[in-house]
Amino acid sequence: MGQLTELQDQAGALSVLSDVVHRAAIAGVPQHIAPTWCVMGDRITGRLRSADDSALHALDAWLRLVLGVARIEVTTDSTPSGPRRVWTMTTVIADVSIDLSASIPTGAAPRHQAVAA
Image 1 (spheres, rainbow, N blue to C red):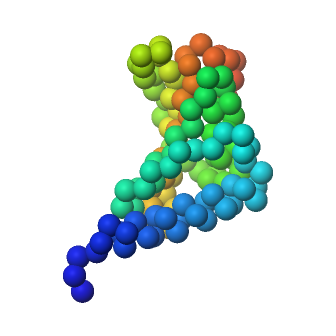
Image 2: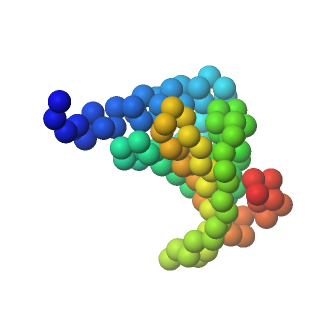
Image 3: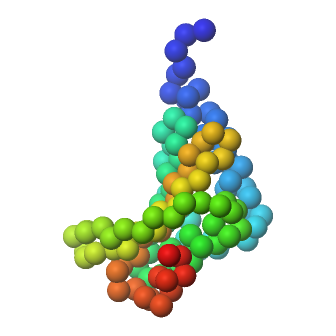
């Protein structure tokens, strides 16, 4: 068999993403803010972004209701509109790496920022 096409290479990750999104809908993950997804080979990246702390609450729901266990990293990114606090959780499902991050302005609801950290 020859080299895999890009679509064949992504098929497993797309199947995992479909399953994860389906589980999120059934589990009641907040639907008012949804991740923007990117699939590259066996890696899925999702981004939640909000002007308030909504993205952080959505990330918390994804972790508690769908993904269960993940490594969490907290960073601060500089953007033209000001610094943003970014929480990224990483897990592996069926040999597919999933990174899901939430980005909120650094000053948004600091009392809730401690919850995800």
